[in-house]
Length: 344
Ligand SMILES: [Zn+2]
Image (cartoon, rainbow, N blue to C red; front, top):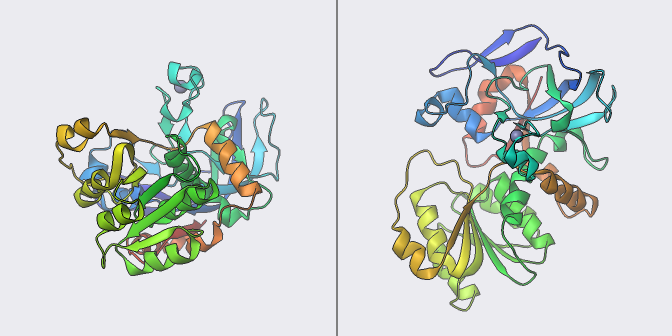
């Protein structure tokens, strides 16, 4: 089968002909990959920048790709929930189910976890994963939309990690796909939502698809001042930082209210600095971070999808054949683009 492989450290990827994956364990599910979205982290793996070179979870060579949707082809003898023909998506955090954090419900933080796309992946015609990380694709969604559920899960988890009540104020810094999906979630939950962004194409997406969130053009007005004005000088209860820059983090601390919460999920390329005493301690600010999603997140995602509270399709800006991966990876790095899907 065709597969997009990171063969060795250094820039570049290879489109190779490799052996099809096979069912090896009783709980394996073999599926035909219909779509797999490109993640920003994978552009870093492509270029092999400092971020990727320092990522100890890579085992090269590996097929990349972890945001997939597909159709089940075959299942192992112990698989109970899936049969050939079922439409599925995957959770990319392959957890053990037995460790302390798994048994506490935080399967995303499994002590023995494998991150999909670091040792094996889904930029390929076929893939195999254990049943426990496969989810049925909600009937309301297309297979294309299924490939965006990974991002939707991150968005919902970034919002659910902290208490928020209807009428609270939340700010999202950065109107990429996850930012817009987080805004849709907050709006659905009755939270007053602001989304800030510098790049015009993303601002335009937010104006149309952030489901009524207030959009602040950070290239024209100071986002901190805008948030303070909206909140009568108090600041926001919750700020979700997705800009992954020093400026974005500084803004997050400057626009959060006393005793408020900053959630950071951005993939920072370099270290940032701040003085915890002035930024946090003296104001009792909580700094939280999230990664992936738990099964409780999947339940909430399904509820929001069933209630028609989210719009996933507008966030897919390009669908390309796997052979055009170079174009796809270039597109992901440009500001005008949301999700780029590759079709093997
Ligand atoms: Zn575990």
